Length: 172
Image (cartoon, rainbow, N blue to C red; front, side, top):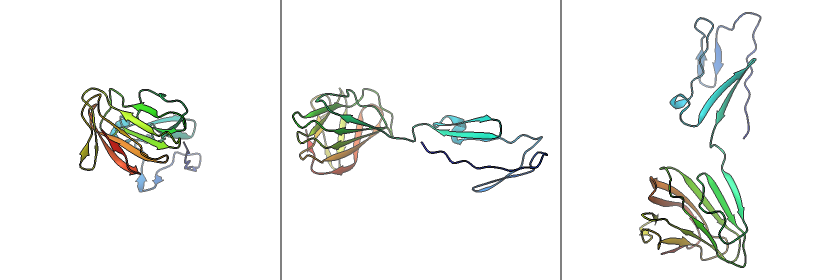
């Protein structure tokens, strides 16, 4: 994660205003509040030490995993991408039991044997007007080596949609 530092120079007295990217803040009783959207409940938090305020954005980075075996990892983890490299066997990934609306998963095919995403009980995946068979018998899979998909949960735990697709996926 990259960090952006903004320095505020001051004379020995307490500054009377702080210029930000959009507007100016003026301390009251020598106190300046730094407020994050949702009061820190949206994955943003602040901390201070000395003359530095650190603003941390949780979940801003997407984690990439190189999958070299046919059934690893299982289940997939939100905000993670999977590059499937196994050339000998189909790489099988499984949706998690619990997923919140907005949770995102990406699969990038590299191995020539392809990849498949399996569902859990009660889950389904939508690709435009097509929908997988609900439950454990439904799946999507690649048809070519470099097929990709970005899956986003749209109804907690049960429904996912293909936000972006490269290639022609098989819908079961």
